[in-house]
Length: 123
Image (cartoon, rainbow, N blue to C red):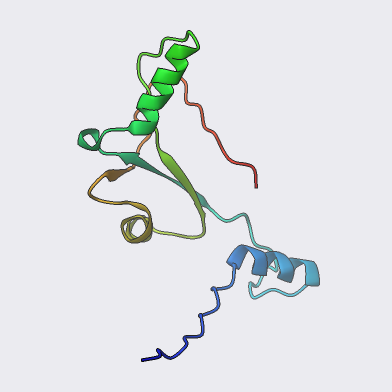
């Protein structure tokens, strides 16, 4: 039985882009005709302690093979969200889209001491 084709829903417009386009064209929905930068929210998704951290273990092994001794390593996936979001909205996005509750947790604070190395892929 052939299933009916579904037309994908178009993505919601990017508020930041829309505001920038309005500022360039001289049009705006806001009374002041200017809009400040959107808030950026940083969410860290980390492996649960009981789930293990294979990427961190690999990093420690490969660093040792190069002659470096690491006391510890932890990995996290970092998501940067732009928009006016409440704490509840951020938590709902994380729960629904970003965190696998069986193996991961959302880090709400950056509870580390020392140096943090963040690696970001090029666009």
